[in-house]
Image 1 (cartoon, rainbow, N blue to C red):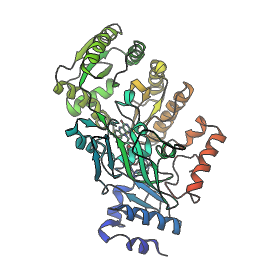
Image 2: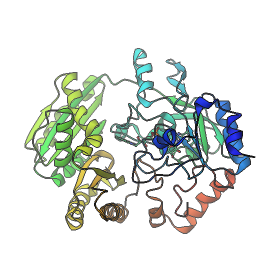
Image 3: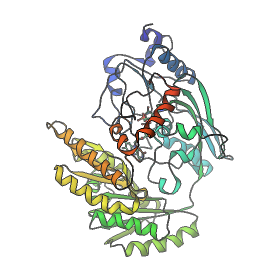
Image 4: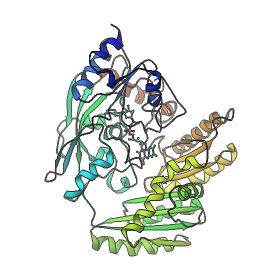
Length: 456
Ligand SMILES: Cc1cc2nc3c(=O)[nH]c(=O)nc-3n(C[C@H](O)[C@H](O)[C@H](O)COP(=O)(O)OP(=O)(O)OC[C@H]3O[C@@H](n4cnc5c(N)ncnc54)[C@H](O)[C@@H]3O)c2cc1C
């Protein structure tokens, strides 16, 4: 059967993209170094259309890739050459919001921030807050088990997804998890979260909502060295505090954020943002301790947000920092590795050394409380060999993370970019066990082929 003819039986022409100009925007995700041309992009508006598409792909042996907003930084939503991209942005309805049970049931294309906006009138919000939250979708967040600045206190997406309706790569529709915190039987939902679109496509997701914190206390501290800021993080945790967020930006990231949004940050080699949150009396007591710890950590300037507007200004620079780095360099690779928090200072020192050794600038802006590093390796793709050098440097950073007892990805997934490094983190037996699970639901390796596993 001609695949395009079969797709035309499911989609009207306006929602079946096949012309070159229509396909170009889908050829890559936010990791633009990789590109691939799909056969077609389909824009389903209903669950039934997604299910029919998956079943058709299965029947014809056509590879397919689910796509939310394409903000993956690891090539996770890169199309498979000649395959189908199932772009889910039009499935963006909040189907149910139950303030009493504190849940929201949403379609996969709902943008993360829209959930909190809808929950706002009830004093609730959705906690996982990737910096891409005004753009990225719940389906993409789920597939990557995304994190964000406030995941230090609240955990990653996995801790906030209660259930999902999924079409497996076999074409079967199953319900995983439910609407409560207590699961029954093996945690198949846990297996699906973070599986990077390899097992199937989420059609509906049930999210846990939390009460909005009563009080925030947001502090910005300036340091003379990046390492000093890294060590301050261990001191804060060592003092028994569990802030909502602890973020670090280095000089390059600060410069970029300043140029982009003018947050009014002090001049510094590194800035640490710490945010406490919770009930007012608890936050007030913790704030006194935090200020003592920061004063002893070598910070030479400390600012505390006195108003919500000042708090938002502090966060504006941090949230804009990734995209702002585009002002410093024509191209950059965003890395996403994790080190134990106690070894942050050491990791940052080594990254600086590697940056000098490779002759490429590295900007650092990251979720320090989690030990989740995001070195941005700046390069110029037009200069011969520079991309390869940037990739080699990024690879050294990942190896460093493994060596220090961490991981090759914290929240951006393995995707296309890091699949070669998986074998350095897992034993052949570990990888084989994962592959067996995948093959059980997708014997033809059709769903997001080429991603995650070293062999594709
Ligand atoms: C400026 C910027 C800042 C970022 N900050 C953060 C951050 O702080 N924390 C963080 O974790 N990430 C961050 N990211 C990375 C990215 O935004 C997240 O990984 C996000 O979850 C991707 O969502 P998306 O909708 O764009 O998904 P896509 O990029 O479209 O897809 C991501 C993966 O999800 C799969 N997928 C998509 N929808 C479904 C579905 N319905 N069912 C099954 N699989 C599906 C895709 O196949 C792919 O493997 C950032 C990205 C950018 C560009």
